[in-house]
Length: 467
Ligand code: BG6
Image 1 (cartoon, rainbow, N blue to C red):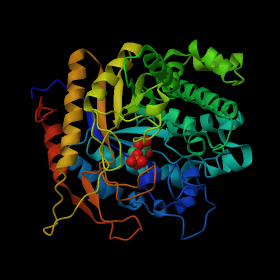
Image 2 (spheres, helix red, strand yellow; image 1 turned 60 degrees about the horizontal axis):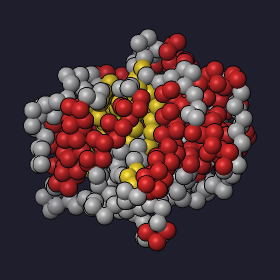
Image 3 (cartoon, rainbow, N blue to C red; image 1 turned 45 degrees about the vertical axis):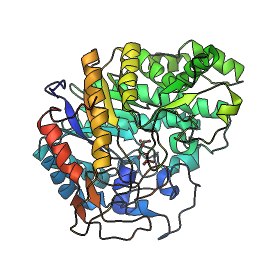
């Protein structure tokens, strides 16, 4: 396939602190909300019991092994690595005035390591975690004060890394709070819709304040949002199904609308009114929201369908987020429906809507891998998945969509977010660790490692358009 990818396309991979670092109490780190979710983001919130809080406590020990891992990413030719900063390494409780120097120094060393290989960091300020101290003392994002704590954290890291990090993201999958309120905004799972939207509002204001701070502090810095790109299709062409699909897509597009357009979209007024949702939005908040992001980033794993037909709505559901399954698509071992064309469609939808550059910061196949007797791992299923999605990215670029880069999810095996499993593997690099935490943590190159290296080296020329 002749390359449609621009010359400076940012090829790479994406990880999150709580899924790779481990070292959950090292060098002064405080407890995060993620540390209380040993079973993953949909699991129970569990008080800490030392030595019994799940595999995230060590994860893949990236905290100590990042130099070797970054060397492997460099071997694949990465131009970019998306990481997140654990807020609790910088402000262990969240409300301190002075940051924790040991935490700041850790990320300094990590960015220096990337710089050795010319790998640009893309840094998420908050990826599915916040200081548990803020939840306990203040009620998480339900409290307006958390906006100020977050802004202080954001300004601290912008100042510290302004010459090392050009590209930033505010909140990972900010729309996830609608489905996992503790993970997203530090609220109890049974919170009311008004409470959840109020907390979301505070987070949106904090995101805009971080955008402003980034523009003030980081010379030439660019900052984006991060959406869970859960695009929905109508199950039929019945007008009611089409309308309901538009409504449900707006549930998540709402976040992008506020962050990219600088204010609440008109359709939310009716939604709030009809659902009895009260949100306090001050004139100062509205002013803050006017500071918009430079680019849109999103994750893409699957699409889903919507129907108004109750009989079909009740069929066994696959995917996450209660999406109705699409009869035309196959599913992964975890029931996530595979839809490469949906990625082209989504890129076009987002570009038509926002006319801002787009960055695909997560995409990949979670699958079980088998290590053969000779030590090889032949993950052709992963190669096929990624190839087919990247072919559609190329098509979208040809459609005229401005795509800045692509960081596949989990370039090295890591702990899964939804259920804290190791057996759900995304990596080009295998990590010897199982769901019970057994294993040597040794790293091993999979077949996909060499495949991705060729894709990057050829700037996408080696991709196979099977159509
Ligand atoms: C996204 C998250 O939802 O999907 C990641 O931003 C997560 O943190 C990824 O790991 C894949 O989900 P899972 O549950 O397979 O790890």
